[in-house]
Image (tube, rainbow, N blue to C red):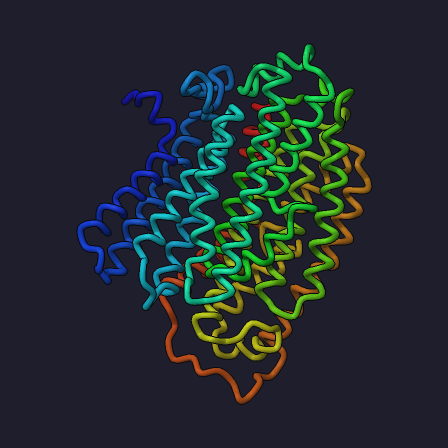
Length: 499
């Protein structure tokens, strides 16, 4: 059997970073190239290889302790990065979403300039997101966060002749800069209190840390995680950025970026600040309980009042951030922490496919110049029945109906609240899921029941890349209804390495 070097454990990140470099080289050789197939092919091959590498490592036991039958958890750079099953899990989510986005962008970017730059920025952002999931130190976490964020700012403003895109990119950049400052200050306070940045060393030094400095530092870190996951009260950038950005980038940021940020949050708070040790200084479980209820409630109520479909999806993504926050908010003393964290991670994976698919459908609608409001979708099902059927799967799965993996992921989150005794979280999850069914159904009703406005649509071309990406996401979302048990087992096993 071939023994790979230790650094090869970062395979998914290395592949994505190398793909970005290859795209830069290709663009340097022929800056005026209009060979869209070559650029999309390189990016697609890179993301597919990264996703495949993640699956290979997960199956072969990389990142799993040897006493559990694996090849061991890999520490790199004196423990600054760690490759365990959780890091590989989020690596798969990021690479898979990036692959779908690249596939859809082949058609979406038709006729636009700077396509090599577009794909390169997606690869660089994905590299930062995968490293974010493997960060084992506040220093590497901050660097990874910036590596993911800076390309994202440019991608949101990619449609530089579109006022909404540029405005969204500027707002995203300004809020991102502010949140980075807050997070950096929080990191400095934690370092001042503990003398360490590595998560394990921070946990060991908590006993001698001054409570006031440490408490403020932890609160600032909570703010940084809340911003990146678009949780209340740091959510206000998300609707603007998602609506103004190219739709494939909205899918990328609302799914892959959010998954990486949540996994970082899981690792930071469970490993560096064990609640049993810091509860006397700051009860971050209680803080996340408040954030979870506020985020899912505000996100869903705001989504229910929107008249534009893309903006509705943007607000609903905030609501789903509230659902995933249950992974931290339900870590009470009586809970099975592996099960609670695993439920949050499994929802991230399912959400990655169904939410990406929904935003890519918006990209398809923009490609056809369908319009942005619910009424603009009236009768679209008769013109594009396959794509509309896929959108129906995405929306009902997002609502939690048994038509996709979203049913089981929400059910597991609900059981996590029941087993941990956090009844308010469970009640909020049920009420908000019921509310979400109302506004998701508005899109389904428009597509299948309402008659077209102004005589119908002028659709004369069915883009292969966009269609393939949407249908693939729909098939996976539906298939997870039956294969969710395996996903949940892997997620719970990975989460068990933290607790």
